[in-house]
Image (cartoon, rainbow, N blue to C red; front, top):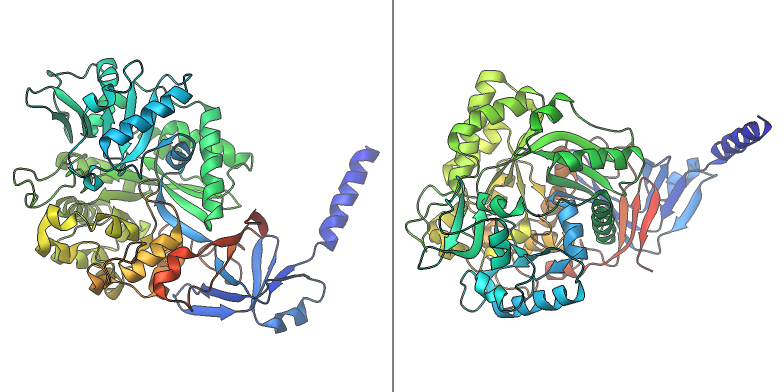
Length: 548
């Protein structure tokens, strides 16, 4: 008993003498909830939350505070990535990443070397190939992998996650053969004899992936920790996880309860999980530290533009018989939308092609008319190619476009080939949305794209890749100002998660999530923004990353 009283006395004494912390001598930038840019040189926080920002006069009322010299560095709110895949990122960081390999043959050789170094792995899995960047621009084949590895199954997801490449061993294990039918919303690429050629698109991927063993808790923890450390080093303190299974739902809840998440996660339930209705029935998940929030569902409208799976209103310009794929069929939309929205959950609908976007807008309008729910801040994820007359409907219906600026600079080498010049007027059209007053929740879609938010800020402002090409920017009329892009990675992303009162800025009462960076992005050439390095990352007033 005496020991317990002593511990209690020491704890109360420490609490009593706990002091506010002030970091000063900084070039600070944040936004108000209305989007006004605020500059400051001193930031004070206590118990993890901001208590004041301003100049050195704030010290007058904080005589007992601990003061840290910011040494003239630039200080920003922790950035929010509104669309990523946390555990996939961790898996990519820890496993095989073929993103920058120039040909299918070199990719297969890389896979063999990886397999030889990891003989314990029953499956060789990875991600990152993109045939658009290869000389022949052709889909790879199982035979190309078979030349190098035949004794174990290989499965490599395309960079966008909407197609996968398998060797023959993997196809055989999954019993995918000439007689296997394309599932609704999917396609099995075939050779001239009708045999599976090795590439599975969209829902056809599940024919194979259902045979890959699920990751155990230790593997999930390793993936989570790797992704968290990586994101914190890039200045991302909060991310929106776009589609989690029931097993990850329970995993995240356990980690949050044990204070082991490491960063803030706004998780969307996967609409295709068999236990979706059960999870919805348990209601929204939150915690007092705002580390985990689950109050939304990620649904899947169509595929991706690069694999010609995006659902279009008219055929692809470079494949006239193809109009893309609907992953969620049109007749399935009403029951899905009604289920999610009637349970009070936000619906975040993946739509890349103009048909998928139009169908989603139509169904939102119908569901709002029949059961309400428009106040839940529903989103369309990607909102990439949109018919011009559908763009105003986002504002009219209160639908938030969740967009990824680096998708434009990655897709510019093939987008016009896919959809032609005329349809590009409604593609990657960030400025059109901003001008009509739609908040844009910005992110990267990692690991599809690299997770660095300064790459996204650079792409949004310049419409250029990191070689600063093309010189005038790709469709420069849709470029944003830096303040507009900064808003997309801060307050607008917080708003899109119902968190604008606690995250997305450094105004009084919000969590003291902030970063120190090596250059003032508001005072340099926009072409240099992508070079920004994070020096320190702070979460709830605690330093969680230091570049030293």
